[in-house]
Image (cartoon, rainbow, N blue to C red; front, side, top):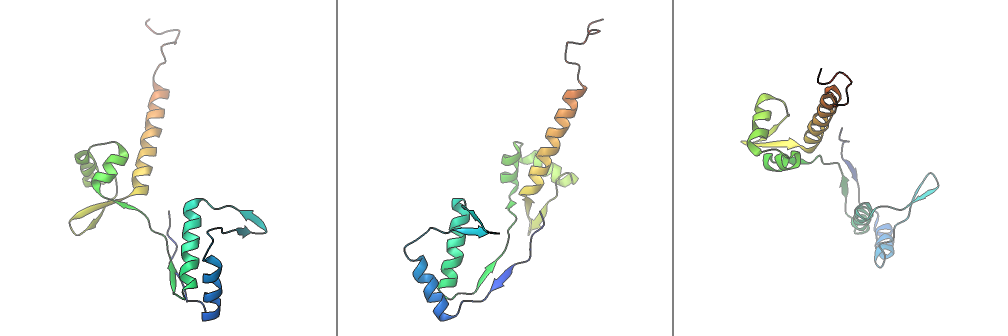
Length: 140
């Protein structure tokens, strides 16, 4: 996943900030229109939008950016369902990319998800290559 550069938005002028803050004071109900179509936001997205608007309503400058989750080797191993040692060995061999923060390894969650997908694909291919036991010539 490519990350988009952060976007900085200056605080609102005082009158606009006060009006927005007053509007948000007693409501969490945010309606979003995209090309004239109403969209109901999931709770997490609604909360993020309300937080963004509240900050603008206080006249704060706001920065919006994406964060790609970085995992410790223990977290990554748990997600992958493998041992911590096996995962470290795979990073040493370059099978899973790793970044270092000082002496600590960090692994992108997307890298673990991609590895899991590749393992599922290999298992499916392996299963397709195995005789299913219903082969007419099996046992001959």
